[in-house]
Picture 1: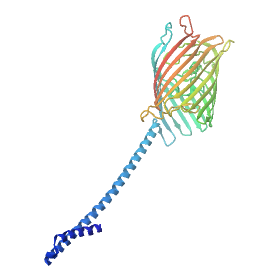
Picture 2: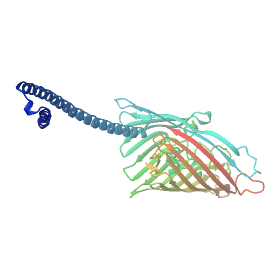
Picture 3: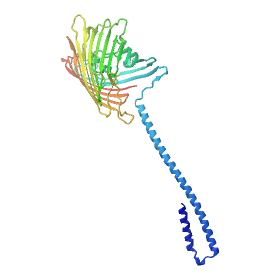
Length: 461
């Protein structure tokens, strides 16, 4: 800035010097010229100070602008991180659990499944269960929670069919790797049966599970699960709806599962055993099954009533999960102990299934010896489409043995499963059933085909 002042002064002086000839200058003119130059110097000095002040303000303004830019950038990054955390927090959002500091908790839960579809059989069969139908398959609500001292409870009610039934009513004690349960609960039969209806691949479970009467019963059981090994066993009476002073039936159930993880593959190898003595609770047993949908009461395979004193069953289980692919299959044998020296029939059922996710990053999950909830990687609501899965299954049920002709059912099924979010699901099923020795005649034959279609919308919380 000092150089600028010097150069400016010289320039002005030179200009003035050129305009006043030396031979015409007088002393008075010289004094006036000096005064004018002095005044101009003062003006230039004042201008220089003003320029210095402006430059200082410019530096301060630049500093503030840079600080504001950095603050805005940090605020944007913080907002982005907050949004990511919020999205992660809401991905697995659940119904609020009420907890007290003394160890009590209260968590409501429920499920709703609405089904519709049709059953297409030969025209000569006149049955009210054929054609289109729809129903509320399940409408459940319940509560569960913890009790001080390591105990827990669960109560669940079913409201479908305009009736109120108790599905689960248990008191449990959790001792780490071991768990004790008292009350009405599942009695350890079949991977498919123990997997929640919220997470199965088809609208209905494998045919043998319903045909052989798998259901919850009142009893006491224990589970031991130290890691890859799961051991379950219990003693049970009957379903809570069938209990009475005259019902003294009882039974025992056991299940063992080995579930190692080899590299990226989750394996499941299991087996179960079931024994039951009817005593005075019942004097007969009946095995039958629908055509793989529940909205019809028509059964094309049916043993009718068999006089019996008890039953014995055993089954094998297999499953594998690797990324988007899964495979599973089971076999089960059910033997009825007949009265009056008649031969004891042994009936058989089983299935084999494979499935694949068409959406990247999605997979079936596994926990505690059964399949668990599907959690889409890109759910609807977060910019994604959810999880889409295709499943193919072969299912077999044979109710012919020891002079009893209940029929044979071979089923080929396809299932399309769309899971938009963790807690919503839509299913489309097609099933082709082939019957031999069917319980319902189609004119002069008992060998024919039945096609069923089904759709489901479901939610749970």
